Image 1 (cartoon, rainbow, N blue to C red):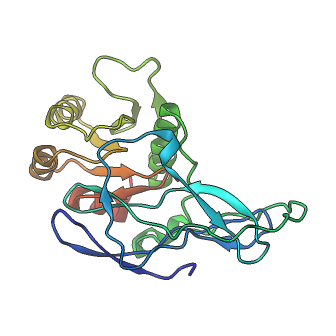
Image 2 (image 1 turned 60 degrees about the horizontal axis):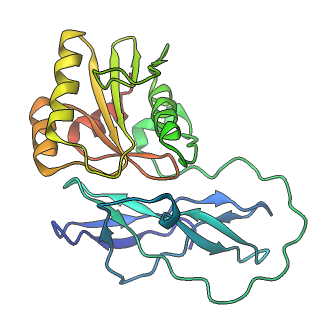
Length: 241
């Protein structure tokens, strides 16, 4: 079902989305996407552990079983949803010798972004990977000369560049109202665009304040692919740097 959209309804706000699972190359070279379980209710992610965010997927071409990131969807209400996947029940045959994989199959992206080419994400396994994924995405949007703050400063600004400051939250809690307001204040004093990335989504009051302040909010899934969750973020994706 690579490339096939599946209807997914948010259990919180009842909005319905069409979710297309991202496809990545199997070791044999065939594009492979997790088989979404149709009709199953997605569950909001309120807590993350690295061990429960991977699913087993079997390639229909070579019968190889591999671990893939658990499919996730960022709803426009701010919730991050875990999309159910059909479990692998049949045993896999002995895998053939590994072949060199081709370039990743690009995930769906807005029409306005096609001129930039496909975004190539990097799988998130650690908190450091989260900041790296955000930096790669911002460079893809056209922001250059990005600097990474190490260790993280008291301001909470993880990335900065010409006309840009970004905060990246790798924790398992939804980003707070205070985090959004601090980012906006710092961006305003620096005459820069402030962008927020989060692994676990956003608290409702944080989302509402970001909408009022025009702060772009993105949710990162474990493939390293950001998804815009408010209008300011969608406009940033369309226009780029």
